[in-house]
Length: 259
Image (cartoon, rainbow, N blue to C red; front, top):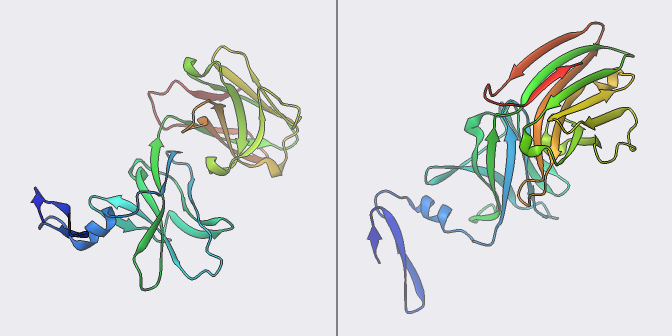
């Protein structure tokens, strides 16, 4: 058995794998790193101040195993429990962690795991969460029954991609309402791209049911990231018109405004 600068070395002797842990590590740390390397690896992007959901697909018909999500914390994995901004739920396909009001500190590596009551953890998937702060947010209180038109400016490198609009605070569960390629599916939501780095969105005959969070973005051809979310609109249908702007990244060239 060997150790090098606080690391552990595995050595096979007579078909028996042995290990040694130096003073910088605990057995828990070894178990954390010495996991199956066949787990699913995913990349996920979240946006500052928005909501995001980390999904763990796992089938447990008898519901006998303990399901949990933990986050890398130096050489350990810190379990995340339902509290404050974090909510753990069971889903039809497994379990999930929702994070409200995402901050830059939420970025990192998350592990979806299950374990027997008396057994060790089994890794289901590994999620690398990236938090971006480039989206522009503005809130609007708009009269009911009127049309609402606003625009979203995007960077030049997105000019050739299809633009879309969807509804939902969590971009991973955002309900598609239309895009610049085909707007025939929803006549109430019209999105146009003038190819001069500005997308115009029109909501016709706004009602109270239209209150909520909307995202405008671009559909890109990237295996790891299929959508880029440019800006977020928080709409409240009321009696008067009020606009509140909040640019989460002053260096961003993405803008949103009413016409």
